[in-house]
Every structure is written in C-alpha cells, then in structure tokens.
Length: 346
Image 1 (cartoon, helix red, strand yellow):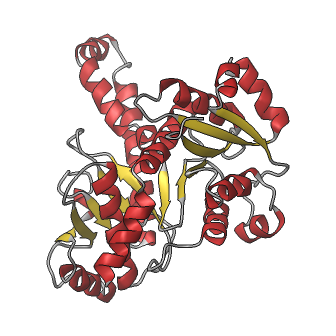
Image 2: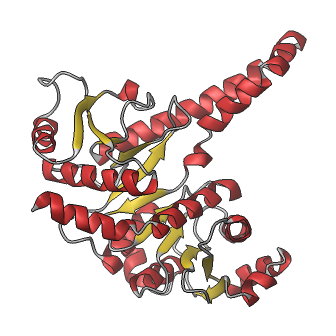
C-alpha cells in the first residue's frame, strides 16, 4: 500500500438506506478521487449485505489493489435508538467499529449517516476531545450568494447551552477549518445575534464578543440571521440551539423554493417557454440550493475526524460527505486545531 494513502472508515449501515447508498458512494469516490493522494475506504457493517453490492458494482479491482476493504461488524445502531443504549449495548456496531479504526490510527477519518446522538456520544467516548476543547461542536458549510465562496457555521446542534468560552473555542475551530480546508489565510469570524448593535443580544453573546475581540482571531462583530448566506464572513459562531434552528429553517426554505420553481414552470405552455429560456439560470439556482452539495457536517473538537452525513441523503449527498472527510484528512486539521487552541489560549 502506498505510504501517502489516506484511509477513511465508512459506517456502511448508517442512515435511512444503509449499504444501498453508502457502498455505491464509497466506490464512486475511489473511482473519481483525483490527485497524487490515494484513498482507501473500509466499509464497516454486515458483510452479507455489503459484499454482494461490492461484487455487483464490479469493485473487485479496488479490493485487489488494497483500496477497498469490507470489515465485518455484527450490530447496527437504529436511527431512533437512545444514544446511551447504543453506547452501552452496541459495542460491535458498524458505527462503533468505524470510530475505533480512527482511534487506533487505522483510519484518519470516519463517515456515518447514522443516528446523530449515538454518533456524538460514541465518538466523544472513544476519541475524547482535543486538549483545551470543552465539548465538540457540529460544523458545516452553508450555501452563499456568491457561489464561489462558502461560510462555515457552528454549532449546529451538539450543544444547546454553550458558555461564552465555548463559543470562543468554536470560533477557533471554525477558523482552522476555513483556513486549512478552504485555503483562506485570515478568515473573518462573526457571532450570530438578534442585531448588529453592541447593546443587543444575551449576556452570553455579549461576553463572547468581548473575549473574541481580545483574541488573535479576525473577529468582525455580530451578524444577523438574514445575512447568513450573504457571503459577508467566513465563519459564523452560535449556540447549538440557534444554529440548528437556522439550519433546519434554511433547508426547509430551499426545498420550498425549488418545489415552487418546479411547479410554476410546468403549469402551462407560456411558463414552459419561459422555463426553457431560463433553464440555465434555474439549473444554477437548483445547484446552489441543493442541500446535498453541502452534506457532511463535522463533529469538530474530537481527537479524530468524524463526519456526519444526513440520514436521508442519497448516493450523491453521501459522496460529498466522504469528500469532506478526505479533504480534512489530507490537510491534517486535527493537528492544526490542537496547535491553534494551544497558541490562542496560552
């Protein structure tokens, strides 16, 4: 096996569709992944369900080349299973075994579309947090008005009552991801708030703003929710409660807009003509609003890369989650976060 090969563990049983989505996405990723860095994927789960798909998708050459492996796990974590139950009684689940591979350095990253609570609980128990990080957060990229840019937002639901100090830690981690994955040298950071004025917001947000102003981060102040997609900043920091509400609201709005466009431009012959003329515009709009292109939220702050895919995504969406894990592994984000936390908090 080449020394520069990056191994990604995939919880093949996770999500609403399990191997029917995860296995084809993994194989497509290996077929399409360009560049000097080669990747290997370990598909973890029920071998009786995974192996026939690997054979049917004619991936024997990838197995022979050492780039694809099936690792058996005897249990599966249900999508509605209690996190504590999964942690205690599912020690040989596909999710747990995949995370264990990251712990023992057999893989540099793990991707799962499984139960979010169970994934967070298991990953935190097995991997622990990076020194200096109180709790891991969920971070993901969001679509922007300027399609050539992205904004990273965190926390998106892991912590529903974050302290000001935790918000500062989120800002550091978001800056590292943006700097080393997106290649932005000095990313701008903003706090999500109910207004842009300094007098507005909770005591927690105001204190976090003071701490961020005193840090070495490129902190630019508050940002309101109507500017999340305005391409004004690179990192948006918020509590997990507000972040999850904003995320779900934006996903619902995007789905509504796409549904309305589709309905309105197939209603009669006139709108069909207009639709044909504007087809390239609507294609770009649909592409930028497609949540699958931003699928793959990272459980950031752990001693290992863990990427959470949306449970209901398809092969295209899960592929994007694997790509996100690959990018972070290539750029060694864990080491960079550890270094920045130590540097900025000393």
